[in-house]
Image (cartoon, rainbow, N blue to C red; front, side, top):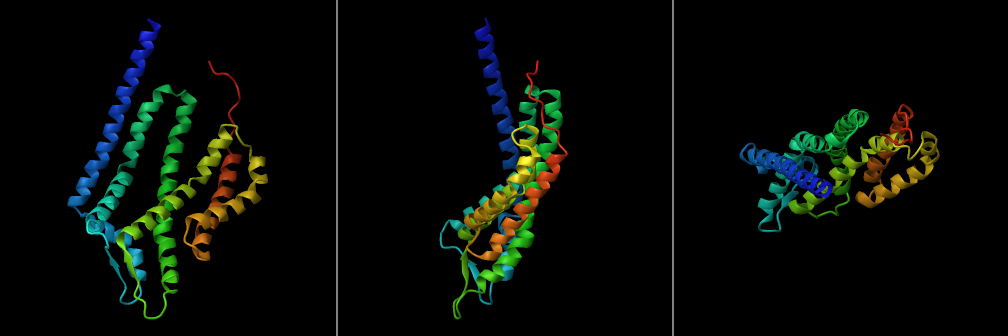
Length: 248
């Protein structure tokens, strides 16, 4: 009987998980379809490419070297925007699935973490779009030799932009990661302070790997990463580590 009950419970969890995933994916697709109708995938891609277009030298333009690229690249951008708009609902579905298995104090901690991590990820993407791109592109294009027309492929630009969005979005999650590690008792504030020097070196190494090979873009990623590490230490100092005990 016990084994049958466990099997039924496992199947019911799978059914609920499938339902939650379908609702999450469905919300993304619905929003993406609406965005394709209005304002349209082309205008959404134009908005994403605006920092590049504004920085192109005279005569520069964007090109599509792939026949189907003019269709699929704006479609990919629209799907990402649909995912970002639907993200609160997607996170709610995740929360609704895991919440029944959490203790009351864990529920109180989980929701602020979800909200703060989401906002910080958006802040990282906004920082890349509004600060990094307008500052970085004119410098990069300034290295173009005389007589060379800068023409960027839309697929390569989207790949670059997506990499930068993810890099800065994940970078801005640093305070949340440190807060979770401190709360779980994995690290202490004193250990974080002692690791500060190693983290600064690691930040510049990460920036050198992720960003284009120029000093400015590396600084744009490394400096916020170091600042956010300090913010994480400050937040961690306000958090009481979880006591290591067996809960009933």
